[in-house]
Image (cartoon, rainbow, N blue to C red; front, top):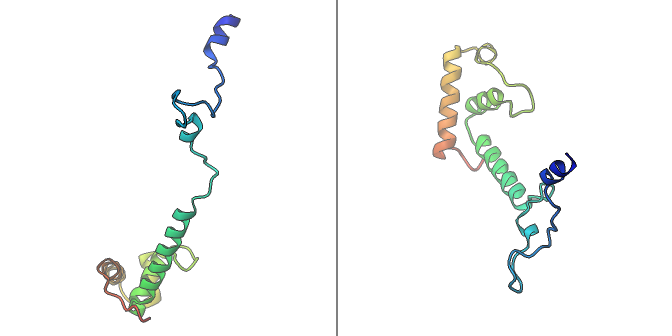
Length: 116
């Protein structure tokens, strides 16, 4: 039984083990991803995208901006329903939905004021 168990456990291997006998060849550790390592370039890109989105949303007409921010909870509050916004704005739920779609279209098509 002991031999069977020992055979099932793989031998430990150094991450510094060369993958080929050639000088300067890659080591096994070169292909192991460090899950704890910082993704600084990715973080910077995400922050830039978020800043760009905030700027774009700020350039939308007031009603469109308000609907979009509240529907997606971008103001650090919970997501608002069509009903909640329709009551707040004094319009139908369908009109709130239309405003949301229009705002999303403006962002997608770049139809916002960058001077806002």
